[in-house]
Image 1 (cartoon, rainbow, N blue to C red):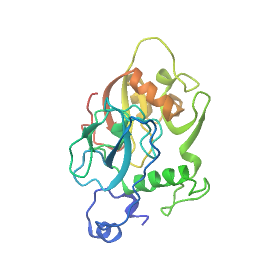
Image 2 (cartoon, one colour; image 1 turned 180 degrees about the horizontal axis):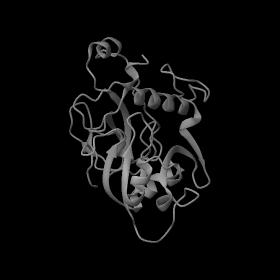
Image 3 (cartoon, rainbow, N blue to C red; image 1 turned 90 degrees about the vertical axis):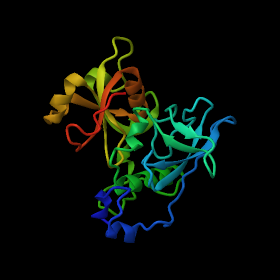
Image 4 (cartoon, rainbow, N blue to C red; image 1 turned 135 degrees about the horizontal axis):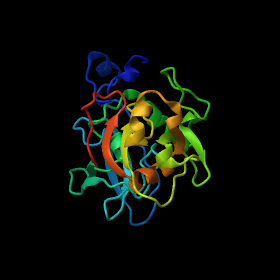
Length: 244
């Protein structure tokens, strides 16, 4: 299991086929309907991948935006999704162009570790897992994912450069929008956001470039600034580097 945690969610190697066969039971996480007008839609991760194995139920409003956070990914309410309302078996999410929800979408090579962490967050939300409980892959599914926030109470931990987030992490209101790069994590972290001027320093290992922020604040940062590129940690220089 420890070795398989790094395999892609969509991997079909012999070991993955043995441990994660098609038809194997997986929870389909469903949270309460947030508003009477929100519509129930089935989605799967990686979003847009033809063999996406990890299904969840999301709630979508009339404009095609998430009416509540994606299960296990706090800070995504309001994200735009593409929905096939006439799909066989009921409405389904088919894709997204949203720079925050892009963390869950193809082509980001999400690993099975991501599935473990998303399931753990959902279990914790339902009161089925204590914060001190660990996972089977040697890491922790405890509250290391969470961060306190004066504005939002709590959220998932993410990182932003000080140019984007300010010294305290809650952003700088007003001022010019910056050109920013959104960095996704294949293991399930909320995306990081750095201005283009800080990317090189961050890649060189300068820890003073970034500050921790809550995922709800991070969503605001990403939406407020101009996303000029999106990629994931460990990607080849040309991989995933797309504009908004």
